[in-house]
Figure 1 (tube, helix red, strand yellow):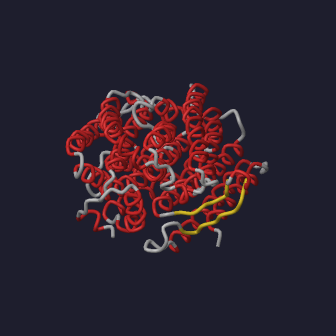
Figure 2 (figure 1 turned 90 degrees about the vertical axis):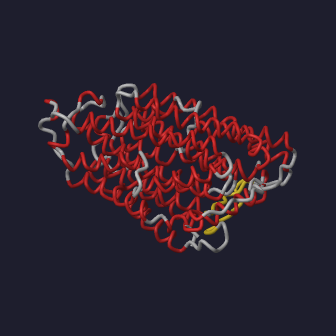
Figure 3 (figure 1 turned 180 degrees about the vertical axis):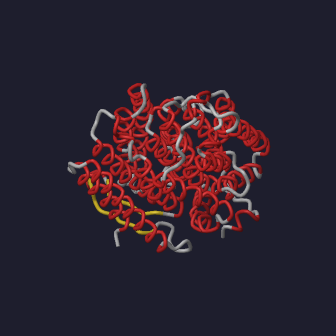
Length: 499
C-alpha cells in the first residue's frame, strides 16, 4: 500500500476540488472532510508501523529525473512518522478553528482552505522524502501556500511579514541548494537517495562546508537564534490557524533536518560545530524567554516562547545522546500540540475583543471561564509543568545534554524559570483581576471552538502521563542516528522507559 503517496494525493486532490467549489460553506465542509480522511489514514498507517522492523518503512522509490539520479523516494522512520502524525492531527483542528479567518481577506474563502490542504500535502512530503533533492523541493514548496496565507489573510502588516518570511526562507533555501548540488557531485554516487549518501563524504573540510549550507538553512527555518527575527512578525500577522501550522509544523522541518541530514550526512562536521550550536541554543533559550517577558502583544509573546523552545530542541539534537535526541524528537510533537493550543485560544480571544494587546484585557475568567481554563492549561504546558506533555521532552533534553555538557544544561534550565514568569504574567494580566469594560460581554467558547481545543488539551494531558507509545516509535530511529554519527549514547532510565 503506497500510504505516503495516498496521503499526499488525497490532500492535493482535495485542494484542487475545494478550489473549484463555488459555495463558501461547502468549501469549508469539504476541506474539513478531506483533512479528517487524511488524519484517519495516517492513524491507520501509524498502527501498521513496526518500531522494531526496518528503519524506513512504507517505502516507495521511482525514477524522476534519471539523468541526474533524482528519485521520487518516500519512506518514514519513527521520527518522520510522528511528525507526519502531528501534521495530520493539527490540520483538521486548524480547519475547524479557521472557520471565519478568511472572511476579511482579499482572496476568496475557498482559496484559503485550498491552501491549507496544499500545505498539508507539502508537510507530509517534506517529512517523508528520502531523496535529498526531493526533500529540497518540498522544503521550498511549503513556502508558497504559507506566504499567501500570511500575505492575503493576515493582520495589518501582513505584506511586510509575508515578504520577510519569504526572503529569509529563500536565502536559506539557496544555501541548501548549493550544498545539495555539491553533495551530489562530490559524493560521486550518481544519486540523491539519503541512505546511499550516508558516509559518502569523508573529507573533514568538505563536510564542514556542506554542513554549513544545510545547517544555516535549517537554523533559519527552525528558527535558531540569531536567525529568528522573521518569526515574531510572521506569527503575529498570520491568522491563528496559519500561525499554528507555521510554528507547530513548518518550523519543525528545521530541527528535523538537523537531526536527519546534518548529523547523519556530516557527522564529523556536526561534532566540530557542536560547541557553537550548543552555545546558540542556550542563548536562544534565555533570549527568547527574556524577550517574551517584555512583550505587550499576545501572539508575539507566544512566538518568542517558541524561539526559546526551539533552543531546547536544537540543544538536544546536538548533545548527540539517546536521551537528548529522543527528547528533541518528542519535544517537536509536544510543542506542536501545546503551542498550537495556545495560539488557537489566543486567536479566539483576539477575535472576540479585536485586539492582540495584553493591556486591553482583564478579568476574562469571570465572563468566559472555559476559555480562561483552557488558556491556563495550554499556558502551563508552555512552561513544561509536570504532568503535561512538554515536561517529559524538556526533561529528557536537559538530562541528555547534562550527560555530556553540564554547564549548558544548567544554564538552559533557567529557561524553565523564565517560562513561568512570562506565562503566568500573561495569564494574570488577561484572565485575572477586575473585569475590563471592553470584555464585559465576551462570549465563552462555543461548541465548535470546544471541539477545536478539547482534543489538543486531551493530548497534552495524556502524553504528559503516558509518552511511551511515541517514545517506542522514536527511540529505534534515534539509536540508528546516534550509531551513524558514531557516538556512544549514554544509557539512562528515562530512555529505557520508552523502549
